[in-house]
Image (cartoon, helix red, strand yellow):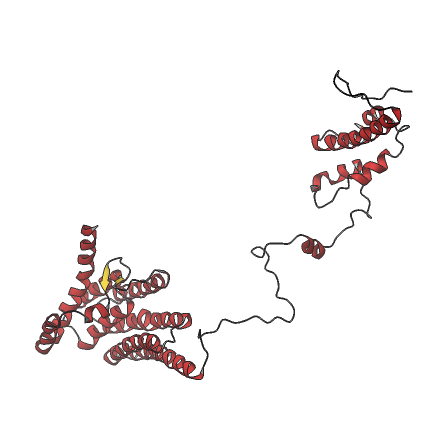
Length: 363
């Protein structure tokens, strides 16, 4: 009997196999397992090539003893073309032939169905017969009364937008004071729609976004156009255009920052666009007796104040001030409304840096 290529070594304490009838099949099964491991080790090491290491395997495991060697290896180790890299496909096919019955060529749709893809990479199409559910504009109960309230609130927002467009048309025709009065009406409508939404309980994300867009049109575009028309002839047109463009840019930045920033119930972060537009509209409406260059500098300062990080008190906080604080502006307005307005605006603009310094000292 030829000697087996490998034999287990027995020690003094290892039991002897119980006869040849049991040891023969064990040696043959172990040899087949070593053949498979030998082929796998050669493939992982990269040393198994077609026609190169085949004589070594045949010499170590002759075919006369194991005539079904190739068929067993081919059936035990199937290779998938989705796993093997493209440059090595030919070499692997030469080493281990792939049967079409074992690994059929799958279309792309079936492969995508077998291997689920993350919806963040490839969004899954909606199922047949399932309609996309739109987000309701008015959250909560959708009764007829609430819908009427919702329409009323958004009607105030649209009124502010239309008045802003009317102010632009009047300013283009040279009627700056009526245009300034339209801006003041825009300010009133902007404050009214927010108060009504909270009062009637119909506040919604749609209303907040619509209010922000209306503010950009009325206060970010209409107010600079009215100011530009009022400065015509007193300052160079290029300087007036730069100052008004600065107001529009800062208003857009201020509104975008307000939409994404956490809300503070006591102070604004920078001068709000509504209050800045009210200051500009009242300045044009009452006609401050100042030179054009001073007015141009005040417009630029107001634009920077909108995007600053200084805390400015909200109107609800100003209303709660003691009555004697409001007595001085009322009396001053009866004496000289222009001077009183200029002092109130200057005091409000200076209150931001003062509050900021006070907060820094307390920290």
